[in-house]
Length: 115
Length: 117
View 1 (tube, chains in turn brown, blue):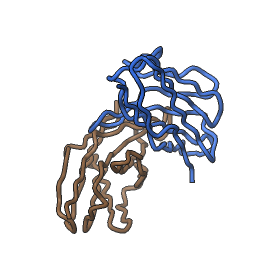
View 2: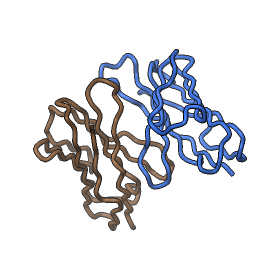
View 3: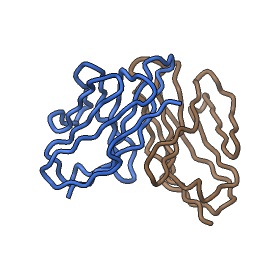
View 4: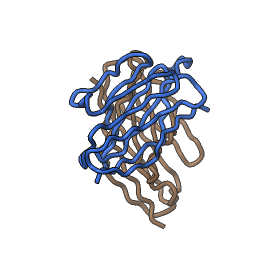
């Protein structure tokens, strides 16, 4: 069975602060993919990143960065210099590399960035 | 890039009526489509997996007679909420799996917000 835990239900920061969203997962699969999605108030899921379980390199994309640590089964997401437009619910997800391809989503972390 | 559309984006209906939601893959063929439901401040819950030309596979606890799924073509799946009641009010999201892609990636639609009065 797969499980994704996002322990932070809601995070509130002031603009320009850095913020890290935690994601811890459980799986028995040896190969899998990890994802982060952003869901703004409009509701549409916005794909942010996909990470293969074989690739533990950290990734940076503009103000976004991801830290994948297989040893601790974590895939944390950091936003540097947060902006009001970053306010959204962020979901971490895990899916096997084959089979049904159905992802398991975490409960989501609501990020509120105050001006 | 792969685009999935949903129609309508929102719908308000009276209790007891049926509502049909369409999910289309616009620029790729999707042998498999997925339907999710999301209640306020909660995560996405998979309702069913829909394969083109065959019956949908429903997750445990999802009433197949209430949530009718039809996947008649490689680019269209429909979800019909029959005899809708206020507790069916939710955000419904579909996703489509690209049949040609080796990673079997899913692409999500923008969602349909259903409000049952």
